Figure 1: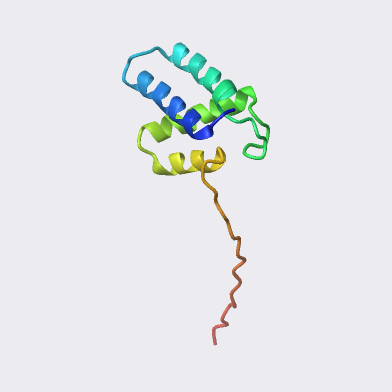
Figure 2 (figure 1 turned 90 degrees about the vertical axis):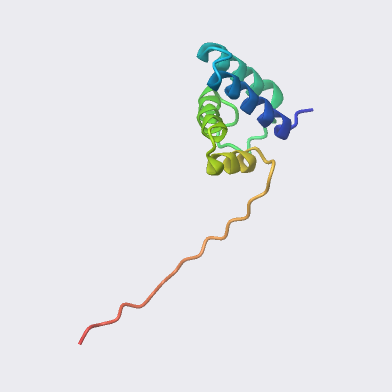
Length: 101
C-alpha cells in the first residue's frame, strides 16, 4: 500500500540530491517518475487527470520549489496529495456604490 507522506519525503529527498549536485537532472527526473508511479497513491480525486506524464512534471516543479523553501508549494503538495485536509469557503462579497452629490 502506498503512503503519500513517505512518497513526498522520497520526492523531496530525490530533488535535494539534484540540488546538492549528487545526481544529474536526467537521473533525478527518472527517479522522480519512478517515485510518482510506485510510491504515491493514484487516487484521482487529488489531481484532475491522475498520474499522467504531465502531472509528474508539474509535481516536479512544485516539489522543486518546496525543496528550495517555498512554504506555499509545500503546503499545496500536502493538500494535493491528501496528506492534509483543506476546507475552502467561497464567499461572494457585494457592496453598495455610494453616489456622489
